[in-house]
Length: 162
Image 1 (cartoon, rainbow, N blue to C red):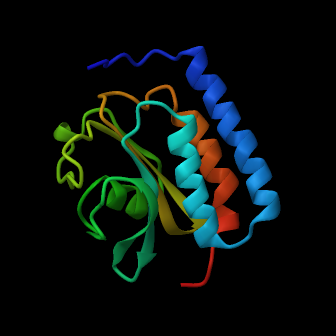
Image 2: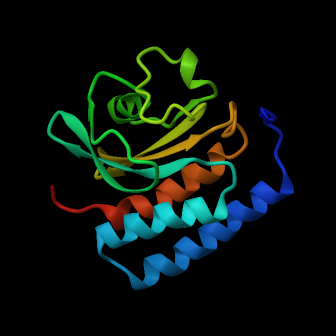
């Protein structure tokens, strides 16, 4: 298993390609479900070494599974448990280099070794999170900034009344 966390030109190029795709997609599509489906698919196409990419939506006191690509996932996550919940509660990006070292990690896919969760906000309130999993430890060390930019691009476009 490759646990390297060095930036490769390939990663940088692929994030730029993903951002270019999102720029075009956001011009022509406004439906949040269609956008989440295509965004999660695009992430899996453009970014290597991921095993899951998708969204969880805030519904009351829990996160509910939205569009994703990867193996079937936990359909509901509690507010006080896991990486996604931490991003929701704090409103901060949460990067975990080794999910087995994260207290309260929710293991929806046993292959996942690292995780990056980006909270999506509208008018200051987190309404969803973008969750990325990798079968490699420390996968997101050098991709974090690029995915923060992805989150900023899509957060206003994806907001819809709950």
